Image 1: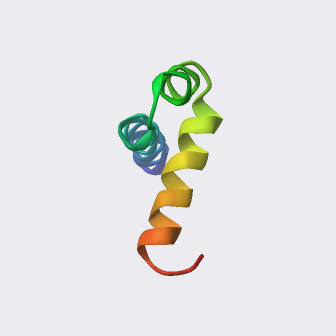
Image 2: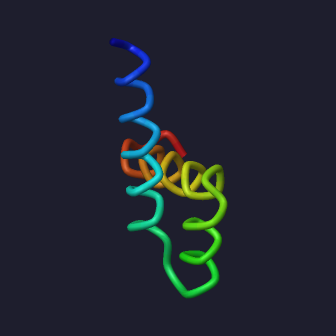
Length: 52
């Protein structure tokens, strides 16, 4: 059960990272390199919550 939940969370975070990406190259790399999309998503959420 948790395996499916983790996979769903990772795919959702990847899609959110692609949506948050700005510009052609940022969007291109976020689609092709999953960790970059995850980085963008986590960075956006941390800024939204006021952590950084």
